[in-house]
Image (cartoon, rainbow, N blue to C red; front, side, top):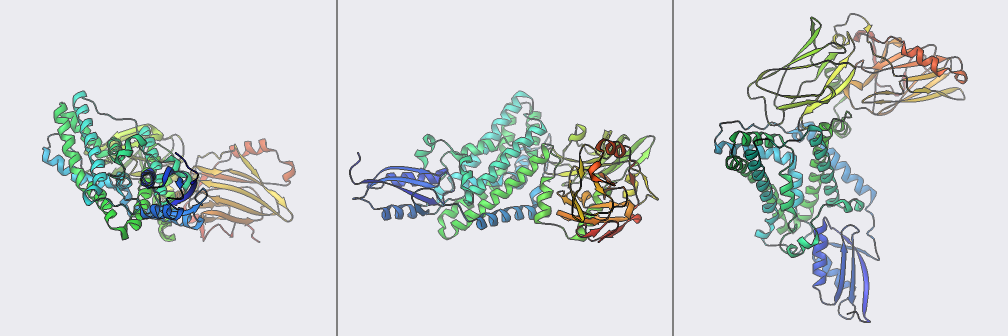
Length: 624
């Protein structure tokens, strides 16, 4: 019952990292004398309190909240947005750490052993132990998100602090075992298409990134997308553990995530032909993954009892959750078949190679493994390694016979199945020679990956003769056979004594690929390089014997046009055309399209060109 001394006060609360923080504050305030009604909102970062001012003051309410380890930011409504510099700094740290992990190879850890028919139960447990390293790379962020302490205050006993880790890993073990029983009984493996698996990983990655950002508290608007258990299931447990039943549910779902070693174990369970044997094998495998995963979660949980470290550990853990979320997102992105290389783009920005290394990588990517043409078939020989797929270069229009030798021990839980979406190929490796055949009908660079999306590479398709020239063997220019796109044409705009035009260089080509300029007037040609593909690291201009290295962002080339000329990316995959006219006011677009469509593109040897430092401020023809 309200009295005349009752008053409603709204506080802004800082430091809430999940819905459970909301529940903790709400429960504590409801059990405080003088407080009649409480509504705490994690999404809005507020606490609305109706209290009897004759019993408890606002200052005393603030002390109750701050005793739980949270901050009272303001009265009167919404929590202020964090400083832009703080948010930007946190995001830079997340992306930079992700890029460094990818550059070092840690984020793509994939070399785990395969379970094979005939193995004893003890060996299955050992495989689980080794696989737990892979589990940490794939799902460690989810693990941390369930076990990391939130705010300080009301710290549970040491045993109670371990409950989230116990629940999370129990969920994983139960899920793995149930799948083993189903697979053993049904005699079929529970699998879904690679694209659907990619979509699952994309969704999981987005969820983890949002979770990490919410734990950092830098974008309050994202809090409405947090995953949490309904209040009816968590109220009884708020005082027992920080996640209520959520870690158990997340563990159950986590056990269904697409995973190379897990699929291998499903195959093993299938081979047993028995629900009991299948369940036992999956149980032992899952138990092998528990010690390392439990150790990570338990260590983060026990930090609750070290208040001096709790805040810093929570922030570091939040960053790691976001980083591993980016890893899972990039794996899903690749597996779903998107051509834009998300992972390499982030890596190149935040952990770039030096200029010399970049040029060397570009040359290697352009050359790849070169084919030998015989009897109308181009044969490429490659070798499979534990954590890397080969990049190859082939010629357009000639059937390919790709022989990949898989030495004993080179096949593992992630590289065992390769997916090339461009050609509809899904190949499962066996020891010895593996033959993959396809017919490349169009030029371009086509990514492919393992079925997990963790190991990636590409197939570069060039015109006839271009593959040999990429290796430096071409004695002179040869026809490229690449048509220049004419669907979009950019007209320069004249302003005073110069004219300006802009195009874009992307992973999937040059857009627009045709520009029209007026003769005799200086051109300021801006090329926005939005590509991080090594093959697009430069442009070549045969008419001027010049090669320009492209920097990220806008590159400006200034020249005085005297005639028409074509240009291409350094690896001769994409081509463009510069058309020079007498008057931009009387341009026949259809006539230009017809002319450019019939233009023969060529591949020129390396010795034909002279390098420049970069296109920015560079030259092409007459320079002013």
